[in-house]
Length: 187
Image 1 (cartoon, one colour):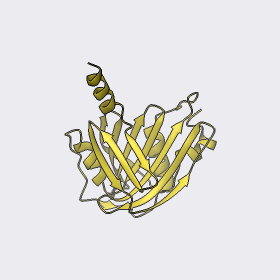
Image 2 (cartoon, rainbow, N blue to C red; image 1 turned 90 degrees about the vertical axis):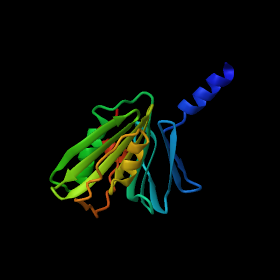
Image 3 (spheres, rainbow, N blue to C red; image 1 turned 180 degrees about the vertical axis):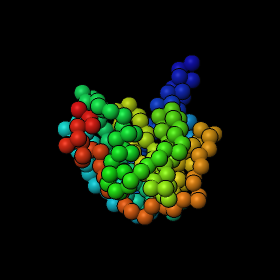
Image 4 (spheres, rainbow, N blue to C red; image 1 turned 135 degrees about the horizontal axis):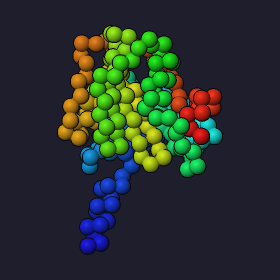
């Protein structure tokens, strides 16, 4: 009986997101499946604010998924989001990339993964992935939709990768942790 409980906990308590600095890899754990991402080239910056005990962002290229932006933050136990994290991320992307419009085309809520596709300024495609794991949040901007498609498939679902739309070439370099100093998204 103890072995059954031990195996159950081992399989169900794995963190949804793990960044291995030494090997330059990200592991996503969803629906009892693992997805490994080798960060071929990446640039990492550390972020913090009064309510973020650990935070960093990564802009990278990956041979399988193309350009990705990741921001990880661990929120202090006494702090909470004052609005929805996904809305804050979308608003910051729109503002930082100077987009006029980001129309939500598909939104999938898959356990602790939220995957959305957007049509920006009537010609670009963008995808966001938000991973919630207790007070730990990972925000991913997936420029091509390939990572989004693989994550959604881990739940036996599908997402349209909007092949007819252009890939946005601008680099997103925003940070919810950094802008929290003035916007108070988390307090």
